[in-house]
Length: 431
Image (tube, rainbow, N blue to C red; front, side, top):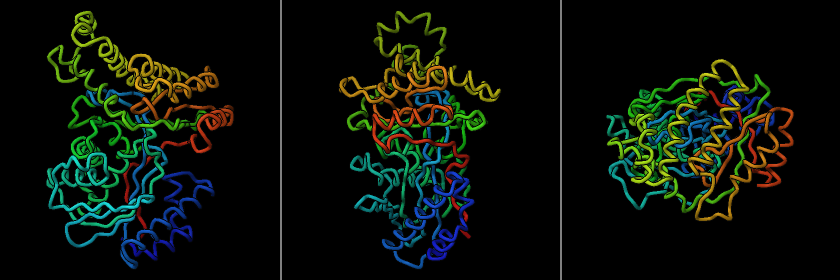
């Protein structure tokens, strides 16, 4: 814990610059921006919750999906990475049983009473539901609960495929872990808590990839064969070594009304599994599926079959991507990423919503990316799909041209050149 006024002084004097360099980038513009961001967050905390308090600061990153689109919810294999966009929280423990949290840019404060930790449909889609769900997950695991006041600031693109909700879940989980549980819950468990909260208290049927990537940090592969104990392995992906940049473009699509489209992917994959008497596709043998595909399509419909093909081949592709990264074979890595993108578009069919065929920002961004990067880089949709962001791996020589093209299409704030962040959810050392 540190006194709020002293923390602001240290930040503005540059005494926290090494922390900012590790979490973000080391150039002076970025460091100065983070100084003001953190100092401003502390000052806003004091404005709402009182001056002179002892505080802690937490950070949880967004994530990007590298390969394994829509495989996690059927216990598949994915590859993902934390990125250097994050949510930060200024926190101070308080008396009583109420967690109070105010987010920058929002008028209203969330106030969650820890004596009532049951799902409330009225909180579905709201941050208060996430907070309540995280607290409930701690209670189920025998963790210690306690009240706190928090002020958060986020630059994770909301609705942009970088998992702003998962970053928020990991942030809240990290706060309870650090303030009341001595850090005894590991990063993977915090991810599981986040998924539980999102499924049961937020009303979104997500898999576990987003929360795990945000919580663990770095580039990782995640095998969800046993979702209660996913196997997480660090992957040594160093794009700068090859003069490549990770670029995410927000196509400014509207995610409202798309929950049923996301849910349909999972339910259709599970309908194929049910044909074989299984709970999820991971439990189905691919050779058995191929041998009976004619019968399966009669029972489940063609789109379910095509999405199942995507699942099986995408899981194998993740394994190949992990292997080539370990071998430092960047050329083959780029080829597999392009394959991944085509499979999502053509087989998983989540590039645009069939409800709004006139709005196809994601396919447009992919088409322009292919024109610029073909033979030199890679491009793919990421995340839930239908609207939102695309991902590209862009060489130094084409970075300016590529970013200009994306900005011309989707606006000056649409294109983000990111780096992979080593750290997941963390408590900053301000003492």
